[in-house]
Length: 269
Image (cartoon, rainbow, N blue to C red; front, side, top):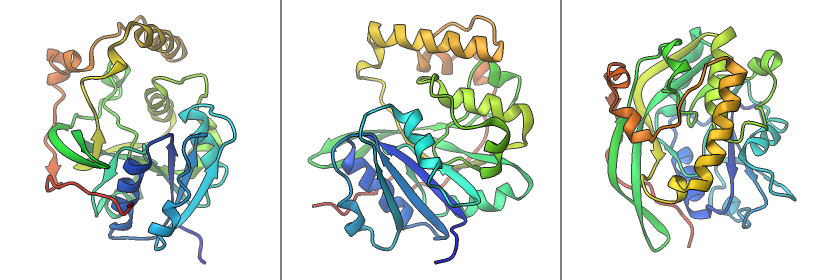
């Protein structure tokens, strides 16, 4: 088998059915020159997905201890063979031409990322059904990125050689790891935003992300991020509140919508 052009890195933890949808979206890609590395962070078994997606070059890494998604991504990198790396969260999806488009756009860049459709789902049995969508598309502004991250890591594609200079992900940045990553990359490499919403980013305004305990944890990591990148004292704010602030609204950008609004589904019984 020839060396894959792209290594898709997917950390997962107890999201078997959502992961099945992501693999389905990868199986539908217009180009298939990629491998898929799934790092199971000591969650429920998912190896049975191999039988359902025999057309994919799939590798499962089963961690013996749960160490968190950042460590899992780093573990996936040690097994990657591709010239390019693409990151995906296990509950996000990519539209059929996503990888092909990212490969076209990275010819004059080191890292490319697309706009996203933020999608809220409801569960009907073991299937997710989309019930709400919102475009997340903002200009790439390096200075503004130091105040508010408009970068979504899912679906981003970058040259593996980036790690030769910046190393792997900071495992001490359990929250805001993606913001930390893009700020680090922007310091030394050419980054390009692609104005097409070809990633479906699972998001919900409800749930335990509003709990006081998690808020305290996130504050800890936000301070760590600010100290690391000399950002000053950034306040922690509700995500949707931030989107309505005039400075953020001024950075909204036009984007091509390519998702038909239909559910992707999976092949699991």
